[in-house]
Length: 86
Image: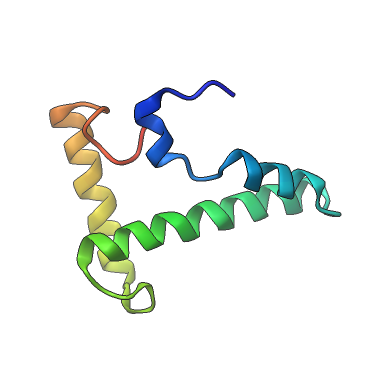
């Protein structure tokens, strides 16, 4: 997997983590869910850090607002400036 330098900080699964999931005794759907869960945890940690709160204190409205803000940044300033690179 080729990753541009600016994308390394926003990769949600490291190569090592991905290899560990691949090596786990899980079905394909379980591996997908595991990858999604690990990625989600990392993203939630980032969102909580942006708000300056503990991850346990995040609310659904805060998560939605964060995605709206990141989407607005992506639309107005470009993908290079936004946190999510998609």
